[in-house]
Length: 157
Image 1 (cartoon, rainbow, N blue to C red):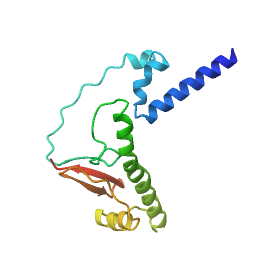
Image 2 (cartoon, rainbow, N blue to C red):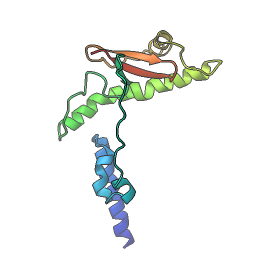
Image 3 (tube, rainbow, N blue to C red):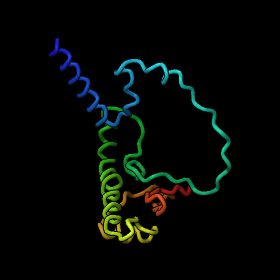
């Protein structure tokens, strides 16, 4: 009996690992784990409040997927691995290299703060480490926000 339980757990873990590596969202795998608890199943979304009209350009945190490569949609046995292959260099740069360089910059700064402006960020982080940012689609640009020490992609279109 114990062997069967261990086998089931290993099979489920392997299936979950393969699904995550293939780019599946863990929330889509709820059916595998069983029904949702009653408090989550009955939760209804809160009504949206009216937002004031904002003329500033849209921006999002720069993460894998903002570059030109890997933007095709759809899943399948060919598209998912190809998309993940295209997104891997973006993940390395945007999710690993840049946060590591910001932490190192803050560790060396006497005040323990990150770069004070976009220009300082580009010079002291990007150029100093020879980081190649992913190429963005037409009309997008990178912008560093010193207040929350985050790199953003600004969508001008």
